[in-house]
Image (cartoon, rainbow, N blue to C red; front, side, top):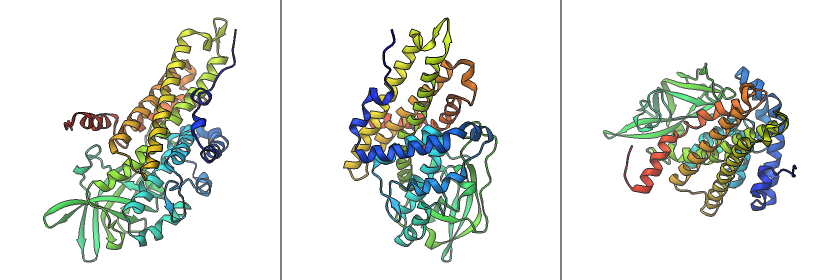
Length: 395
């Protein structure tokens, strides 16, 4: 005998822990994703296209730099910001990545480390999507070890000359500005500094990366710098060393910890609906014990991930926006792993249909393979936690 079914939100009672404003913000983004993005999500992935026509709407909703205050930004709390990213990634990791890179990496770099003049010049226009930004840290031979970067900046009068190559840069082919991290030499000692490189600066190119089987609905490229002349006014004056880019990555990783669960929930919801209607051996496969066991396991892991994200979001609010980097690693590592495993299980439950873009599981599964390794690979976050727990460095 069938009983009324509970969805994930009812089972977790997460809404009881959210304010009315938090629910309203989440629900508005949820409507946008379901009405404006999901109907063409599969086609965009297949074609390898990002829906650039939606960028003005995303900006009008206050989603760019949403977690920043002032300068035309929405000033959302950490939990509000996490909720909107989860809804965006319910649509696609590429949609969330666009917003995350613009706000948590490019805009946050200027917000946290830039001069007041830089903040006034760039942030309002970035919040309105009049300027698109990207974040240049990773290089072809420098990923998990950013301190080994080869990009250099050398002083030439009142300017800097930047040379080097950055790789796997979200938004770079359409970016108007790039935050580029480069090594500089000061008194025989090397340090790392950030620069705002503008599109019209000679020697700056952003070729598109082709052949991706993951994040196909995200615009990915390189940054190629050939003696690009950047005025000192475009150098970020308030940070030196890896503290700068790693501080930005902590902001982005916090958002990923929320966002990835959105991809997992999209797979779970669609596959549960499929299982209730897919009849084999005379009954829906959802009536089979092995299928129910998988849904029970997936629901448990998703809900635990939600509660972890909410806990650290509330802690971030109470602590003035600060979390330990190790806490962010814990949350990002756990929740991305959960989402990827959910996507893989859902693809299996769907059987042959699971490889069709008609269902979101294969698309999210492929995307999450990238989320699993970017902004700190799963293994690197494992070592961060291992060092935190033992006090011993295994890098």
